[in-house]
Image 1 (tube, rainbow, N blue to C red):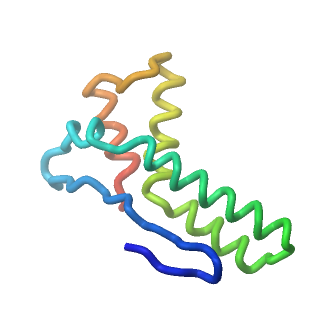
Image 2 (image 1 turned 30 degrees about the horizontal axis):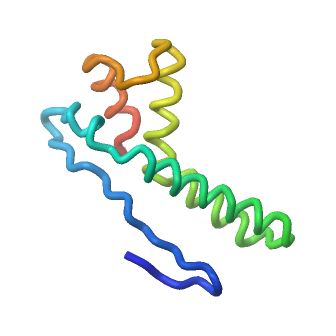
Length: 107
């Protein structure tokens, strides 16, 4: 899904993996395209910085709100915390994954 916003082309390509409400799908954690999620979050951060440099407070707040509600930002934050706690750079154990999905899934 693409849309043009002024001179910027915004592409939203991140899709949340489908989760069964009764059983947590820990395999979905491995299917996340981490590079794409990081790129999406970085581009949003860049747009926030550009808006703040322009002095466009309204756009800056809107983009900050978008970033805070972003699924990509949430899963990256959970991944960072779990990696720091466990000391691992790869995907953590399935027990930790169950906790991650509970934290990152919307309520």
